[in-house]
Amino acid sequence: MNAGQWILSILLFIVSLGVLILIHELGHFSMAKLFNVYCHEFSIGFGPALLHKRKKGKETYFSIRCIPLGGYVAMYGEGTEIEGVDVPKERSIEGIKRWKKAIILAAGVILNAFLALTLFAVSNLCFPLRQLSRNISVAENSIAYNAGFKENDQLYFLGPKDDDRVLFDNEAIGDKNYSGSFYILNDDVTFKDEKYVLCWSPNTNNSEPQLSESIKLFPADKDGIIKNSKTFSLWCSKGVELVNYPDIRQDSLKPYADTKFTAKIGSFEYIGKDEEGKGIYKELVLHDVTFNSVSTDGKNYSWENIGLSNKLVDTWLPFGTRIQQTFVDFGNASIAVFRGIGSLFTSGIKNMSGIIGIFQSSATFLTNYVFSTYLYFWGLISVNLAIFNLLPFPGLDGWQLLVTAIEFFPNVIKRKIYEKKGKMDLYVAWTFPKKAKNIVSFIGIALLFALMIAIIGVDIARLAGGL
Image 1: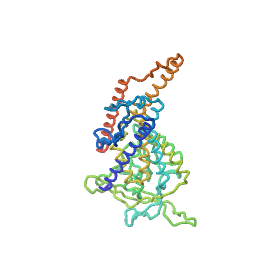
Image 2: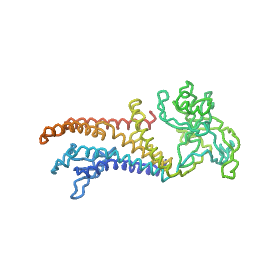
Image 3: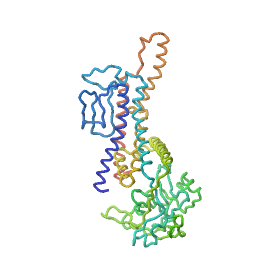
Image 4: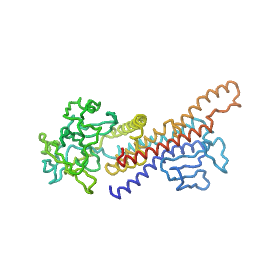
């Protein structure tokens, strides 16, 4: 990634994250204003203020603060002290009806959900579906060209006819929770007297993915854990027989100095097109391809470009299908978030990403994928923000909604009792002790910040190669 791409990635990341926070807080703010609750401040970020302005004659300060990990709307009645302003009780967040308070608290989550749906909709409706084609591009006089590959040949993958891709979706493999997808090119490769499986996991769709940039040479599964996994049981039930199974629990063979291996890769030779414009291909041909490690700095190595890439195809799906896919994307994103939250209790925070990890993923999607994929990524983050805020943990919207619900139901009963006795003039609504609620909220916020810091530490360790 060059300097220009880095700058663009940083700017778009700041804008994207800012929009997610802005939309969330606008949800709270708009409903508070609708119900005439006094809002002292609308802030994007925490900590010292970079901008703190209020229009003359208006009651709300608008702020941008230096820690971009969230935002808040300071409403009268939730611990906000406002000097020199006399605010009537009916303009307090605690002075309005509880159903109104619940709407204010839930509005941020609801707007984040709508934002996610909007991003998924734009991604599906305004851009074509870009898919990997079997047809290949071959550079003249390259390793692939000299091995016998020709332009528009079809690359051969080991697998069932309907979908040759192996897809693991957060499946527990041994003690590792694996999520990813790849294609198998050769299931019987020998390297230094050990057996490996040559796999390919394309890592870009904004340009033709180069095979040499995305190959993975996984060691063969010796103990049968992968072979007996649900994914491979399902995959191989379609009639696929492999000599060796890729042991995805272990790192694939990395290109170090003087690393070299040769593998047979299959293709169907392109002949031409039939009367309907469909391609005509000859029988399967196996080509011997040698992969060599190369380096530009003497320290970091990659596989030499063999001059072979897969062509990409843009397809406009029917309008109804794209609408349906929008809701499918929202459902899949929600399931992924719940799984991520669940993994906190099984795997800890090692599989989570904080602000650094999100930026790294955002930059990768922006650089290596079409813009529709970038929009999908931020739709996923918006769903994440919505669901996470619904958790009944002190400091989150879900906690305040829970407290509001707990206060609501006893007061319904209490009100009926007072009405029955004709003593409504003595009725006083029951609420959680304000001091206790503030203490619990403070502890919750402190724990959330501690979790954020810990996850940032995990991000740094992951960047340094420690995870």
